[in-house]
Length: 310
Figure 1: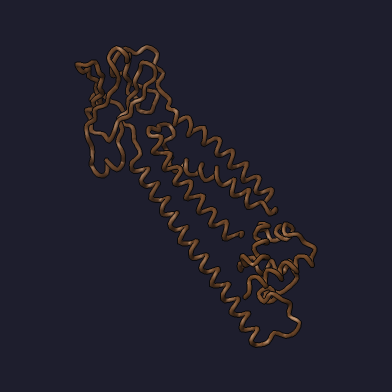
Figure 2: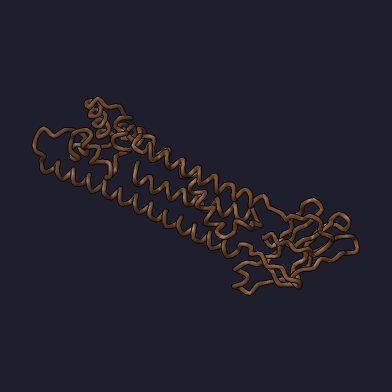
């Protein structure tokens, strides 16, 4: 099988049919660049497109493989060569599918491992009780929050002259029975009016100072994630809707690839933050997991799309 000879043959047949590369691409639901690669000998149609291409150009698959029309019955030697060409195409298609299957398996495994790590190490707020935490004043005027219950970590947010503290654990620590007592700087004496325990609910509990009108704290990561969930769903719906309308055009694949970006990120966001949209304590940690899952999902979708359309 000679790729250049077949490519020249495809170009000649296309011109005989009075078709441009784009028109032929639209018939086959491929890109015009794919047609250009075939005609210049830089690529060959795969098994999924070979029969459709032959029908569009009004020739047989065997003639496409040979790169010329048959004017007489095929000789035994030519038939054997055509058979070898067909086997070669089948082997190449099998190799590509095997490679893509291995890649998809690896990426799927990466997603599972990432979600497992994120959910096992994600912070879980510990509900407040009187013996959970206390605030002490040091001799230099520093306010420190001391946990009186074992935990994995502590988060502090400062809003104005008020500090909001959350003590948290993780499922991994609970499974491994790992825990420790924690000390965290809560502020400076005279600069902090109140220190509240903030377990991720509106029921903030005052553990130091005088409380006037503390309305709790809403973290920026929480707002961003919830806003993106809405924006991402809308963008995904618009993009996928555009693809449905344009899928029969040569650029339909490009529209789908663009629409998959917000779709994959939104799915990753939901998978990573499932059950945690109301309490996000470590934005960088969650964002890294979301991006990793989104990239893996997009790569899987791209590989599958490449198998469907060149």
